[in-house]
Length: 197
Image (cartoon, rainbow, N blue to C red; front, top):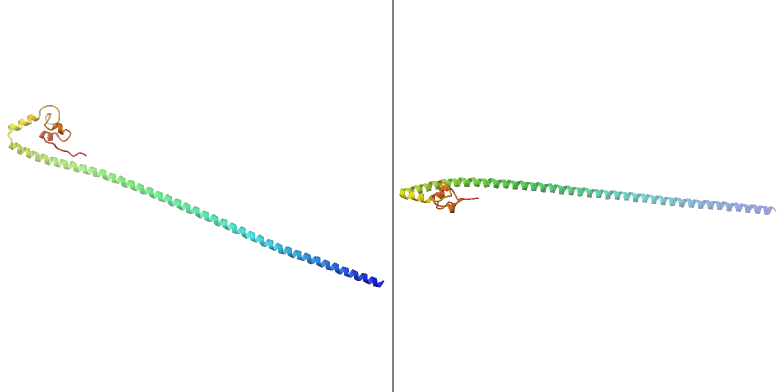
């Protein structure tokens, strides 16, 4: 009986040992599970960190893209400003050209006036000279010709109505020479070509 009792005791002891071993095994299993969970958690943390890093990289890329866009916009603005400045310069150049053209026109007007004055002076001088010369010639002719004949010719010229100065008669060249010169020229009986503008 004691023998059976001891046997049962040993059996219980073995059972306790097995139970203890199962407990340890369970504990080891739990420890392995916890270790794996820690590993998985670390992996998840690393993954989150990588995701955060990717997000930061995307943010930096967006910032760089915005900076490039701003730089392009500044470049376009500089180009527009340059174009406006060139347009203003072209407008100033056109204005200077118009001013030069106006100055040339004023110069042409002044030149025409100067020419007219010169022509008038020349005409006056020429007329005076010609008159003097012609008077001299006429005087010479008068000296050569007889008085009686000269009077007759003058009377012959002044017949009929209409026309120039003097005593109001028509002269030999009057119809051909109207609007061409002065009455005293016509009266002398030859043609004077006057310069006209």
